[in-house]
Length: 454
Image 1: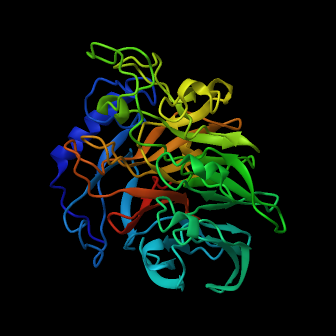
Image 2 (image 1 turned 30 degrees about the horizontal axis):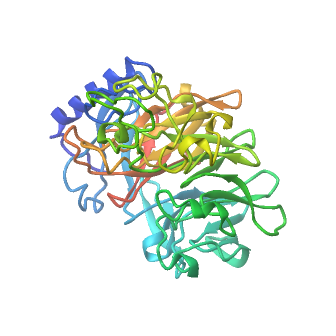
């Protein structure tokens, strides 16, 4: 393996200073001062490293030196090149499965013993496969319109069995081909119940809530099979879906865009009431993106209530607190609170900044060193509607006594200060070698993040 000569050190140092500055404030807080889109608070010791690229894996954007921010003493290398890599799951035989919705495949990465992998196709001719998970030797694959289980053995997935079919997709007649969140994620509880994320049709398509089955929801298929029932509702796009070490179900949610200012007072220098206006400075940081523990019947508010992390609601420049986030009434969809009383909704346990676009979610329960031994890993794709965009990263949320703590950055540096990006993480999962494997659909890569050797 060759180590590329670092030529982007100045940019990396600038990024590191920015990350350390955010660490000096309240974890997970943003200044709200109209400056560059903030990143998560960086753990102590985050440093710039050059991404290690094995010979033959140096196609663009890894054809030039790239630097990332990782904990001190850790390394980041390219494990495989997988165009449009999305979600990932480790198989019992120590190979990594990665979904590629764009070409309908699930690929199998076999470690080559030199920090890289060889790639083969495990499943093909699927309909936008996305979510992957194992329960013992049973593999579950979520396509856009169904979830199936397979028997996994000897590097093959056989004996396909349907778990749930006829999920809403772009082919659903009533949607007329218009379905903004067609990709599904899947998780399996300790009791064998199967959970499936079903995203909303669009930004504020309230008709999703009364569809059969409901969209903008997390569905639950009982152990042993049966009809899917809504487990949680008001979940605009819960792409992040995972089971925590204590058996609880968690989701990370992509929330709505272009939210109207909801308060009957001026915002910033507005001479009159700003209520009902779409204000770019407000939209940039609102609503927060939930990371929530789900219980049967929980409502995460969409599209009637929005998680609002402002400590001074409606005040320009208000500090933001992303723990125990309350809801604010959506003035566009829920004027006067007639559709849903937002004060009755439980606060969101943790959240990410507006338009962070959390995608993959997984849990670590041992295997990583120090403060990273227990927690949640979230692939943060980064925003599209801010200037500069909110930065992509791999986030870590520490786990203590059945709850998650505030967001930290585990891997950053994918975006320069002017908003240019060379990568966008999707998911991060711990491997049998106690390294973290990160998929990146923009760079078409899977990275290996390795802690220091003991």
